[in-house]
Length: 301
Image 1 (cartoon, rainbow, N blue to C red):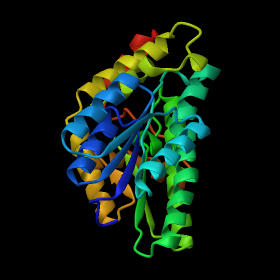
Image 2 (tube, one colour):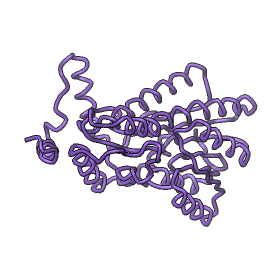
Image 3 (cartoon, rainbow, N blue to C red):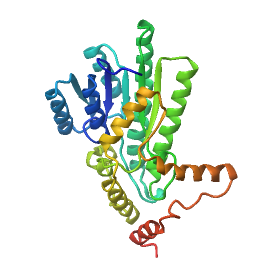
């Protein structure tokens, strides 16, 4: 996808964090915006700010766990703008702790947003784009799914999140291959940020009532939360930086988008263990103080 001006972009999780920065770049590029989020006040503020800059914007409350709400978002985009060219399946939440301590509600929430949200976005918007391409020989589109470096490595005490983001990477790679197979004029990318200062470490603020926590956090969940808060807040690559590099990757037709290419050393090490058939390595071998800090907070001796 080489041109953005006058094209239509849909952004889930568009009220804050990466989604908000995607919206800023899209508005600067002259795109028409469809913003979706579950946080009504932040969504309204984001839409108003973008309109004040002269952008054409519609906003919709949307819980991406629910297919009917994602379909309603697509319907609203078509009703307002007539087409969709770029989709950011970006809404995401986080949850940590020892993997056996996560409740069924934890799994339903994280997998619902991080995986089912992307599934709904892909199955609904890809078909919509393909229909547009049938009637417009010049149509070009692109889909960006937000995963994480946690979709390529497996740090301890992040199990639910790791599982969800590995699923997004697999879904995205398959989407790319399927689009190539049929010769569709639609590109695909998977975004794998590392620790970027966004609101994801506080995503529990928007946790729905139907998947609420029914018991207090365990020591491991508190330890994982503290570790994530510190890592995210100290990140040197900003959400704005990631948005800029993502739009460049779309224009260049790149599939993999990394905010921190240096973190790929851990991915290479993991792949080497897989190919060699050796046991997984210690992700904190180069930073044992992190592992020991986690153990201390979990009171593991």
